[in-house]
Image (cartoon, rainbow, N blue to C red; front, top):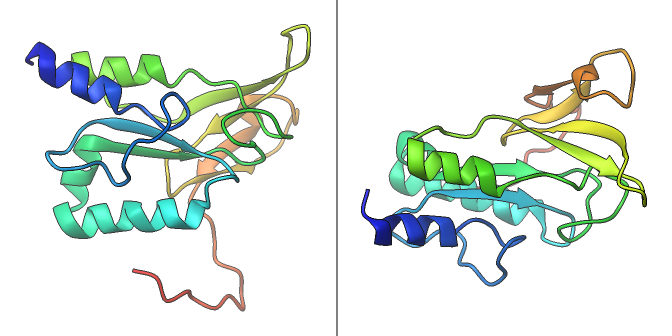
Length: 158
């Protein structure tokens, strides 16, 4: 990979690491790891994710985009959710070694820096679901596709 291409991909890491990036990423497609919090409406990001699939196809989207929801996290940090996660290292491995990121681990830390609980940071469209055990342990959760509510009304969104 050319150095310039690599630098462009790393520059597209996430609005949490560098504000003001375009969404969806401009063509030509660039690798991107995205974590979304409540300050940015996740529905608009999910819609952009689906549009990226419609425009370039699922395989093309998956070559260049990873999308993670961060439940309970305020704008990039804070809130009741697990807000401490390394997004740059997985992006760097993806760009330099073609090692696509999987589900990540996010932690909540107290003021002294000690981890109080951990959660999986799941690749969209999956979300963390409690499967049993210690509620502070990441292994007590699994990334699953959410089941629709029995009487849910489907939104008219592409």
